Image 1 (cartoon, one colour):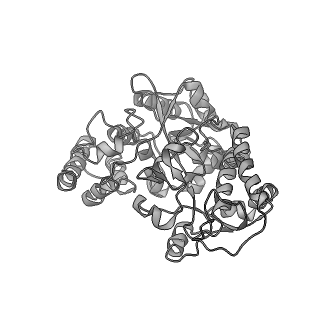
Image 2 (cartoon, rainbow, N blue to C red):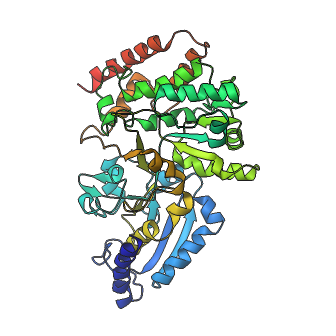
Image 3 (cartoon, rainbow, N blue to C red):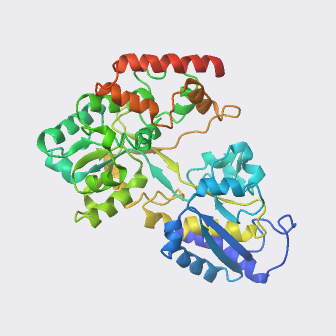
Length: 437
């Protein structure tokens, strides 16, 4: 696949070399198109300040400029990326290649150069849904992540867990074995930090193999009912806490310390995206353990005997509507996704569909886990799920309602799973009736 990609880029390179030299053309010049001459000054703005500071981007630029000698690349890393880029978008000066900050799909054409028809990319790239609008593609993911459970393989072995759990019951049994046979905390919630509690929601769709799970939930008057994805996801958390299989004092959790603790075998498992694997592996090596101790499994649920894992793209790369070097920007994006080696170095799923899974997800292949992407909401319903979430004050992407779930499960708040799920259904259902009917 890499050879095919390189051939495509080489064609662009030949076009650029045939007409060398830069011009003072403007963004709206007739020849300033993504399939035009690959030349000019190119500014890449990235959220990966770590890779700017350690010189990795210098290497990327050197390789790219070898291939395209008529392009001069500069790179700017921004620490507060979302906040800074949203401010810059109010001007015309926000670089040529950007990681697209959060915006509504209907805003893409206001800020971004269209890359082509979505259908033209479907055979080559993954993760197209989030940054296409009305059939037009505006961004390509820099790479992707899977969702599931990160765990310490050594802890599981010491507990006698020889096969990875594929159901909630098996998962709870494994956690109980860790509690009984080791000194490790079986499952760490990171309750105090809050955001790690939200990670499990990204498994929505994998429980029932429903790529439209979010669309259905937006119209479901009682989604916390047995048989749904969100019921299974929240039940797993509740049942683990209620059984005493999580940290003893959730009010004192510490994210940074939790990385060291799972890396060194003091924690058995955490529900996190696969983006965390490399961080935990680094923590293992920095603290005298082995990166091989860090494993990753699919969320413990089966649909018709098969496990599924939701995968999704990270930041999408897009081209500024105001770029004066659109062809060079497009060449950079294609090269970065296909030939830079970025996703391999970062342990991410390649956006290029033909590429194999990264080594840190090899367990998925061995376990027969099927990957799935969720579908975008239909036109007119893009914000319905978040609208219902906001109106019902059930923060699907926040920690508040899940922290209460944990509090109830550990006896620090009144109620039980059934009464709390009934309350959630009542609030959610009222908002669905108001907004989705």
